[in-house]
Image 1: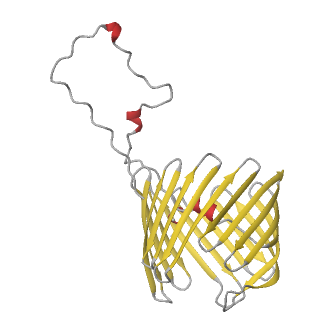
Image 2 (image 1 turned 90 degrees about the horizontal axis):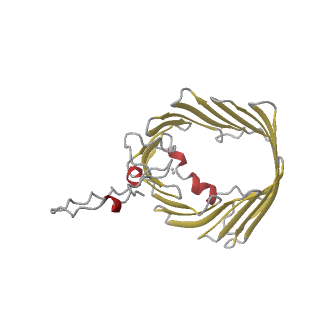
Image 3 (image 1 turned 135 degrees about the vertical axis):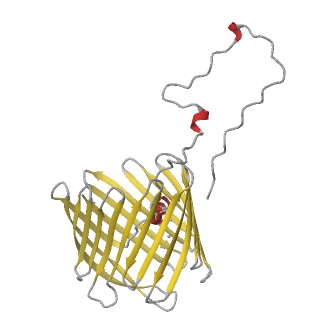
Length: 333
């Protein structure tokens, strides 16, 4: 589950004086102000067309700027990704990883065992349809389908199929895009049903709500979100009946540098977590990282070496658990 500050109205015009001012010679009258070509006067810029506010972001993407900075895709060990285009719309991919897998333990000790994996993928993209499939060497299949039924109606379905009982799952949704709002209906296994709605209230402010029902567990919940964005900042807030409160803020320092922070509170478990992150998007590389109140520091560097070849360096340091992860990766395509 993705602050409300509204624009101030323009000041009222100055009152008309009760007396007639003395006459002014034409030579002393300054020329009327005209805005430069292609630039609107300040009074005109303040006008907001509330009947044409624009479409807000999808409900599940309201925190995407903070997510990019605060949730880097860190890994441990070695990773190699290769993608080959076989036409304008079709591509094949290969992904191999070698690293460690953490096993659950009762204490604070971290138990790791070496593991390797391989995935074969096929992707199809055209202006109206997207098909993505991944098959692992263990027989686990991940599939994603997105189809634009019309300009305003989008169908989506995500599925994971595995030989392990109880781990296969699927989730579908129907998205509708209005003039200044979005709505979504969701359905999935375990008798899951959900719906959300988000509305543009002003030029910068969007408000939304969601509800879900999980039939097998007899659980339900509702949530509310708010997003305020300008050219240089994005602030979001979320609250849910499950006891979770989440806040995020992203400040665009320049065209290539962004700073982000978030705060999360779980009323049921009494857990409180805050983090601060950064995102440097330079000409030849991108550097992202964060540190949080749990003592975890992460960093991810993606360097373009030339052509389709990219170098990826990853690090995650958990000082409280004394768990240190380092990764090295290569991406082609």
